[in-house]
Image (tube, rainbow, N blue to C red; front, side, top):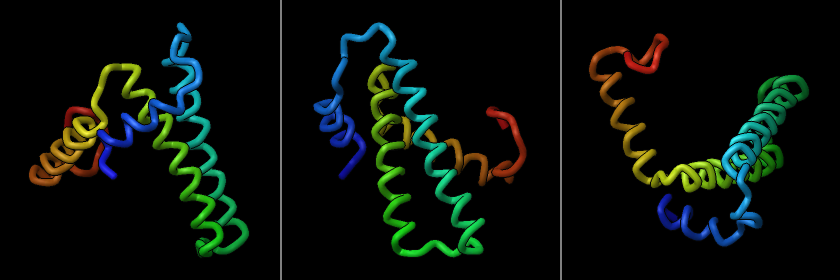
Length: 109
């Protein structure tokens, strides 16, 4: 599935499109779901010496799906095409790589 199709289809599952606070709701959800991914990885480190079992991988996959959903809704709320966001991100990363600036900090490196 491509991002454009995902973005269109996932919109069908949004419950309260008329909320004045939809954007912060989606951003908070994105943060919460990313935290759940991090929490699962933390527990893999703590409990399994960093070895990701098939069971844990399946759990993380579900959480990553939730991250994708909230990311998609955030992009939609901002009027952004997720496919374009992804393409621009790759363009930025390849530019940094070509200029040997893939490491470091700052958005405009």
